[in-house]
Length: 331
Image 1 (cartoon, rainbow, N blue to C red):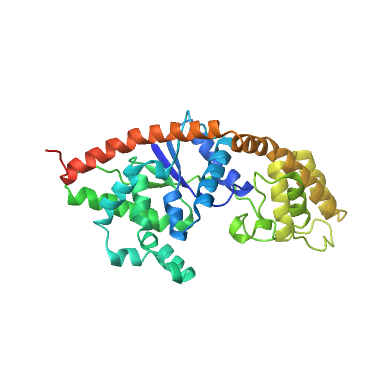
Image 2 (cartoon, rainbow, N blue to C red):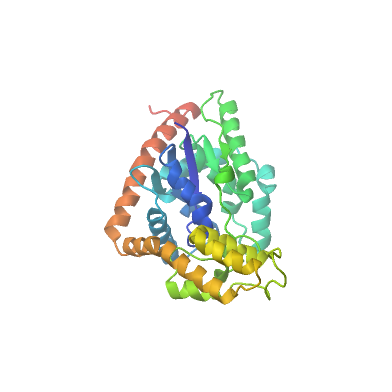
């Protein structure tokens, strides 16, 4: 069985784009793969979060992924900082990572440009920490977005370098996992592009959004002045609204508004009201579970402990063997 690993950022809340994009696939994969999903709280230290924000964000993200369907009995869902072995492997990999190659990484250059007052060593060595996250569990496949492809390639480089330096075919070379046609792209509410927090809070529908918030966001979604001739091609903002309608509404609802658009009788206000109510119905069970988990410290703690124990078992074995290969042996 292939081992798949994916990191989860402990900043920002899950929105419909995340849910239909990766999370639904993660839920399916936990049935067929050996899955490790971790909340990358070490990585977040590069932006110096406040302690209460860091803890609160980790708790919220853990609750959201559990509510969205990740099962700690089937997958290993853990918090990165619960595994000290990651920090140790990170140190070992840094000894064989070179300044020039780290400085050439696109994400480092972009981050350094955006936060010139905080170009810390963690930003520079982000690829080695990412590599430690992946190879600590000897992952075969890693789902990555476009912005992380270079970092995955660096992970492959560090795995090969370790194997070559110590003349041991120890680490598998991780490959990118491509969801292909299974990956549904959800548009945002601003009329262009995909749904995402980086485009603004009002652009995304979060799984934890209350009904009144959802209604307000949807009613503010960008539209146009309406079709002026039958069967007119939809402008991007309108096509986006129909794309959202198709994932949360019944087929007959979609057909009704499609017919209204093609006959030039559509009222965008009615479409938005219907879309908002259907989103509320769709997200309600997940939202209720998120709120329930956030109010249940015992359930959150149990899931985190279970994940840490399962991840420790894998990580301890790797570190024990890596130390032996490098030459760290007890007397």
